[in-house]
Every structure is written in structure tokens, then in C-alpha cells.
Length: 68
Image 1 (spheres, rainbow, N blue to C red):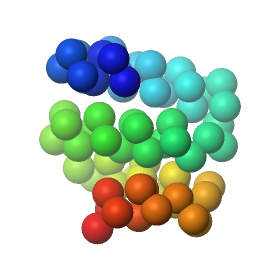
Image 2: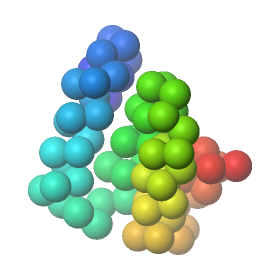
Image 3: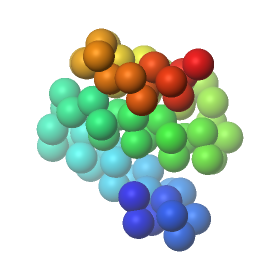
Image 4: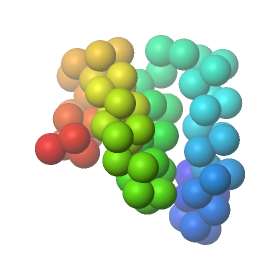
């Protein structure tokens, strides 16, 4: 998230994708990836990442709210 806060969205995306590669079913990593993709204006990719977070954890309210 530090990369994202600094505005280095490409590095943030790489970091979140590395977390996903290592953890796979970690809903927060998918949610964070969705948020950075929104920042990068890659909305279709963001929606898919956020939907993945919800599929992993249907009670993950932040991901639901971000999709809304």
C-alpha cells in the first residue's frame, strides 16, 4: 500500500499481484489490487479483481462497497 500512497501505481500493482501469487485466496490482496486498478483507471480489471475478492469471501463488505 505504500507504493499506492506514493502514487506509484505500477509498483503497487506488482506488489499486490505478488501477494496474490503467493497467497491466492487472500481476499484483501484482491481488494487492494482492485483499488489500485481503479486508481490506474483500469475499471474492467478492477471490477474483476473486486469480484474475485467477493467470491473468496462473500462477507468482505469493503469489496462489496467498492463494487457499488
